[in-house]
Length: 316
Length: 276
Image (spheres, rainbow over the protein chains, first blue to last red):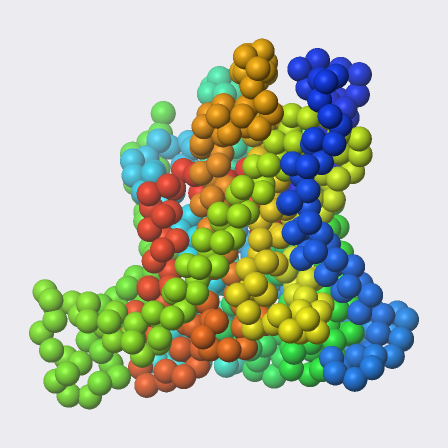
């Protein structure tokens, strides 16, 4: 499983290559040893200057209280204590957890059902279906946000549909409602991620040998047992990848919130990435913004390592 | 093996999901091609073409100043994709086929960059580039994205070069080809699919990027297309038609490429979608 999260899965192979078993072709006694570095240098310079260095600077800035203009004050870990204690920030991370349900868990459930169904029944129109469900992944999030803002608008298609079926009493401005704004944003995430998860799982399920299915069917297993004993164990790796990608997408939500709700109403839809932006560029709390950013990055690393480990261990 | 009832149920479920996936897309397209709801009177409700109103796109293009923002987006995307691909091919080649002391550590440093979210670098980038007087320039928008692309591209191209057939490289070397010639004359032509995937993914990520231009471009003239759309939404409140048309304009380049190179997109995002 190279694709996601790389770090854990890649290690053994890399060791194998640099170790004793290295194929002779990769070594040439005549080649200057500096040559590989010359190939890597241009990429590394750009990468170090515009990614690695800023990352280090984020950690550095997170230890200061700084308004972005005057001289900063060193405050140690106070900004990180804030992440744990400040009501606004706790709310933002809480909302991110809620979004994980909509971005990762719901699409996983839907994707498993859809992919199992499509693999079991050879239906027509599969390529078209795949194109359609994957489409949300390639559309700019701003465009997605514009579309869903319209759908959720007080006079938008969702409320019209509700009125049409006699549920006009439920109609409301969904994104302006304290109780419904966050789930409304979450459902957009479900819409974006379900296609990715489905296509990923379909790829995994198509590799399961038909004989395996025939064997359990001969044992008299129905669709449910067939799913639990054959399909599910076979796609554990894909599930791990799907969870990694979607959980990270949930944690990184920014464009969607910026365009649909700006974190409102109140702070009902504020998320960590939005807090980073708001604190750094609107409130003049640069140190705090950096601490939130670093915390968010650490969470993303943990998800990457954790979910992949889980997938690997179960597989072995 | 499967009963007719189950098959029918499957089609129903599929159709429901396809409808769910298409609903927002059709909402936008329908509004963009419908009569202009911000114009009172005959102007917005003219006959149109076969009942459609493609003139909305021209109106949106002018009112949303998409000419300017699309041009900026094209320039940024061309730079990031072009330079990013070349740099990634070079570094991926070294990591994939050559031995270098400390190479593993160096490669993990690049891998780190794939996982780092934009949020983690944008704050210091803004303030440091401001100190250098570089905010609100093309470079402030393009270079951070180039760095992100290079991190992913190095990872992606290394995987390709490691899998490239050894006899091919060996034969070229016996012919006396230098490592530079082997790369550009032998490996890159054979690896067109891998390079194409890298190009389309980088193009999509760069075109759709929002946070970096939002922070870096304070000047209207430097807004990229998604940013232009977000501001258009803020200013244009009288209706939805032109906003929808603008949204179609902004989404179109990536969607068109996707429709043609779908397999590259899906394969790339499933196998290498680590950066997202």
